[in-house]
Every structure is written in structure tokens, then in C-alpha cells.
Image (cartoon, rainbow over all chains, first blue to last red; front, side, top):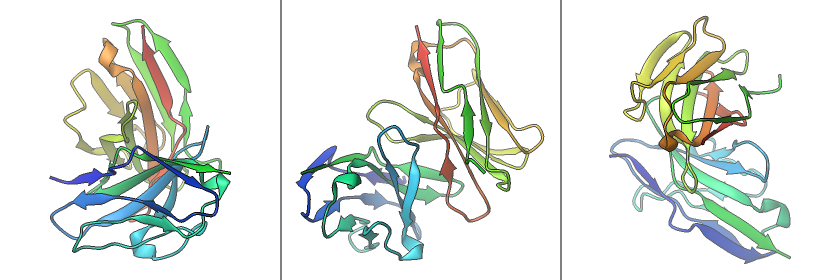
Length: 107
Length: 112
């Protein structure tokens, strides 16, 4: 069955430190993966999708089919990156989400 | 375009009452999705429309739940005979073909 696992509920880092939010998936087929972000009091919004292979707000994510992972990375965290981050997998017409990781960037 | 719009933002009701939520998608999007999110979890898929046709329903969508999209534009989600376990955030999203889903602010349902 398709599943997305985000093992950390909370990740706390200092400003300027590197960030890696982990995401593992299980899917029989060619996966399409996304990272969504939800800032305080805002709606869920798309951060990036693996097929675009782009960097948004300094974040990148590489699909590793061997390790079935799609970790989100940023070399230098900023305070405005503090938010809830969800990894999601597209399965047919729907998205399957992980439980989310809260990123807290401390000054 | 202000994006996906959901009303109301918050609904408080007594157990056993019926409730209806509305979603207005981004105007050029023909695909519309409903999700439910409970505390500490990511959104879970409920149902999907392409234009006015409801093409997929999750097993989470019990027979007390019904969704419609009569003219292929806005959609409604109705819950009949609400139960405590229905308390959640109900999210609507829309997209074009092969495009990412854009989410609304959600409707938070609280059952007393």
C-alpha cells in the first residue's frame, strides 16, 4: 500500500544551520512526490515537486528511488522557514500525506 | 483570483445535526478534491471530482457523507447525523489536469 512516513514530529535548528526534513515512501510504481508547507495561520501551499527539479526559497529535494526517500534540504535555515512541512505522494487522483514535521528555527 | 475559497471557516454544531460546507475552486480548475485532517495528522483524501462527475470516493466517506459539484464549479460536502469523530478540519483543493493541487483555508468542524 502507498504510504508516506515523516519520522520527526519536530525539528529544531539554529538560524544558519543546515536543515534536512526526512520523508520516506512506499509505492509500487513510479512515484510523484511533493513537499507542501503551512506557515502559521496560512493555508497549505505547494513548496516543490520532484519532477520540477527546482529550488524554492533555498529548499531542494531529491528523489532517491533506491532508498525510497525524498528528503527536503536547505543549507542555511532562516527564521521565516519555521512552519509545518508535509511530504506527499500522488496516487492516481489523490495525494497521500505524511503526518508532517514542525520546523522551528531559533535565533 | 483569490485561490480556493471555503465557507464557513468554522462550524460548531451539536451531535446529530447535519452540516454543509462549501468550496469554490480556482475558476479555471476542473478538478476538485476534499480532504479531512485531524490533529497531528496529514490531510486524508475523501473524494475527487472532475467537472461535475464524482470519480473517486475514499472508504473514509461513510454513507453519512455526501459531496456534490452540480455545475462543475463550486462543491458542497454534507455530513448527516454528525458524530464526535467527525470533528476535524475539512480541506478543499483544486487543480488543472496534471497540475499540483491548491488548497483552501479549510472548514474546522467542532461537534459538541
